[in-house]
Length: 459
Image 1 (tube, rainbow, N blue to C red):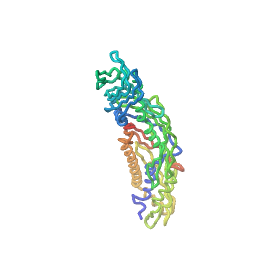
Image 2: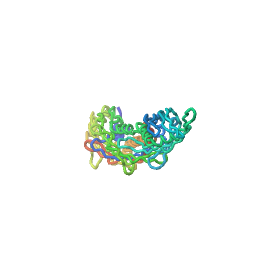
Image 3: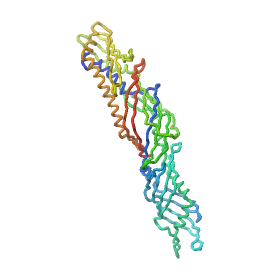
């Protein structure tokens, strides 16, 4: 048993815990969601494209068993024998590609040499260096597509056809074959790369995560579930600047949540890609939050209702806790005590945001009960005790808010979403406002603003 008016007494603890639970155990409002619009810059380094293309394009980059030319029809294969090197050219959405291929040509050659008709089978392998350019675009189904052009090539080995009595230089013939088919060569390269350049999988996984309820905390073994329900998604056109592709993503979303009962998944499918004409602002996350008042009362009573407190000759327990909206927008907590002395202590106060800190203002009390019961509260509110009580509420409350803010800041410094992305940013505003205690809920608005960017590390 504890003396009722120790500075760590149960009455102060009850009020502290009610307020701390209000801020720390966030439940996102189900019926009063606020629409937020978040702008997110996304960067994709050209070196990442280079790494992914080298990893996924292992060997054959071109194959055509009916490669038509004026010299006949051939089975032609191009195999990558050196890593692909990529550079951005700072002209919109284009990159330059350099690599070395081994060209394997099989078929029957039909030509003439110094007026002599030649028809003979060939099976040649020639190393060639190629320079290509490729323009990127994002289709409505989140498929990243390329349009590749063969700009030039250079033979690293002199292509020679050995006829026995003479050797026929094949450079001109091979050049002609490539020139006649360079558009088809570029298209085949695009077709080879296409399966490896889809953004559908990472975007879909991110979208599904947004639509799925996540356990964000626990309150006395009860899981608190929350989800950000994205309404749609749009992006600006991909622009290459200094070897980095960049775009801005805009996501309007609503926040929903509950306690104990897990929310159903939002079955809204990933929408098609929509092009934004201009980049959005970073925006703000606006969350209407609440705690069910009856549930908060039940949990407070479960925590503190079994303790018996002693003051002088009296023993009493907190039998009932009622949170109520008082006059002038004050928050009220009614503590019904029963035992050898009975009464109700009404504590009333108003939480306000002062330069990012929560202050408890207008802290008052009133009493209903037996003759000696008012002495408890009167003693509690004499002299410094009221200030100490105010301090005892504010300090842990602000500490809890600071801890939440620090945790967000810590995550924003370098948050990995393997294998696709890295998120970095900084928090600029983390404010609670518009505190309201209604007949059913404890409510407030949480506004979070900041600056962040997403760097794609794979796709």
